[in-house]
Length: 154
Image (cartoon, rainbow, N blue to C red; front, side, top):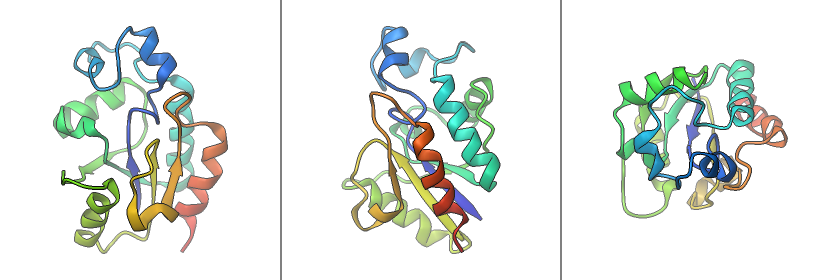
């Protein structure tokens, strides 16, 4: 199984789209479930290309996992045209996100390969599996090949 550990703010959501909706990352999330395009459609298409190319499943490592249950977030992803299946969330611990991801990986030895899409760098020893995006632009075309290469390695 191939896994994308997905942050939301700074990956499919970015500064420009949040400004458009007159909110800030995290705060405006409470009002996003109206069916409008609240994620940047270019970032969504870039994520979808990674998913289509690799068949990877999604594990949410974003702080949005603390705001919404998996069914609500999955329904919202469908409305936002994200093609991937959310299969789980990482657990919340104090410390670096990389440790939360490692804990999830330890419980799932069936994972063949993974990539972490995030605009933060708190990945601890998992930094080599991190594709760093930016809050300003989110997931860009240049990130697609890096992510696909990591997911398709054996």
